[in-house]
Amino acid sequence: MKKSSLFILLVVLCSGLPVKKKPVIVWQPSHQTDTGKDFSEAAVCNGIAEAAMATAPKLKEHKVWSLGVAGVHHPDRGSNTVVEHTTAVIDGQISGYAYELKESNKKKPDVFIALHNNGGTKRHAIWGYIHYGDAYESANRELAARLVKAVAAATTLENRGVLLDSTTGRNDYRSQATGKRAFYSLDAQVNTAPYRVLLEIGDNEASHEFLKDAKNQQIIGEAIKKELALWLEEKKMY
Image (cartoon, rainbow, N blue to C red; front, side, top):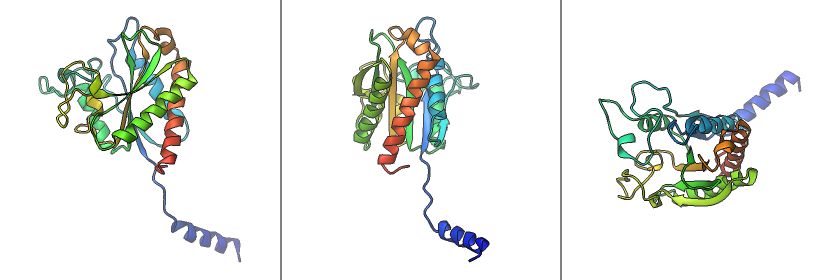
């Protein structure tokens, strides 16, 4: 058989094989610039997100970030658990968080990962958070636990496990579905991604210098991405 004929045959045969779609991942680094002293949570978390996105394997990845976006209120500050900073419309403008979730939902993500730094804990640690009471709570707990464990193993951060967003007991944002306090970004009534986790990475005081170090941001981002990829493979999503 001629080489050209063999090539055509292979193309025909391969064209009948199912094409595996790459999962869509959305990263939401904190946009907060008002947490900690001589510290930008936004800069730290963006560094981690950028490192994760640059780490193999290459998936369909997007970053949603309100920092520097005009026409929204609280684009560079505010809490994920405060109504004024999330669902409130002020002078006709939606919040930075609402903008980020709107952009995320447009991408139809399979996995949504929010990156933050904790504060006031006096612990050099990492925590995972998931939303209380939705259909994917168990799977989200597994994913969050694996990401937390991977980062703790790659760094000096203590593994503080996975908590429900309803357990924080702070501020006034509540999920309409459960009536419990929640993280706006993780709320199933707001975020359409089935798999949604929020990582509180380090403490802006206890981990101050560690978090500001670009090398540590790189290590953390790589650890998150590699473990995420393994989880996706096991779930046959990649």
